[in-house]
Length: 71
Image (cartoon, rainbow, N blue to C red):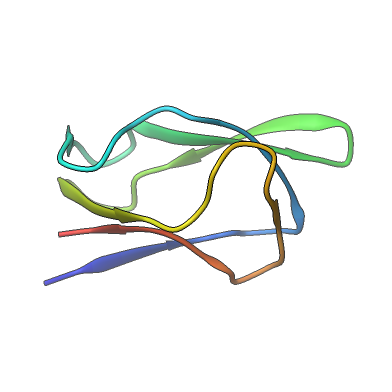
């Protein structure tokens, strides 16, 4: 079953901390999102393998935008 990682708020992607194919555990840091002049880590909602990354560094994202898929 796939788990979607979506942006919790609008902001700018500072850094992607994982790659496609990486194994992640629940609560691992995946992405650093800058919003309201603060760095907000985005954590894995579940463990699994990173299947897709839909963003890149410096992208702007909107609330609810799909950023990553974990399988």
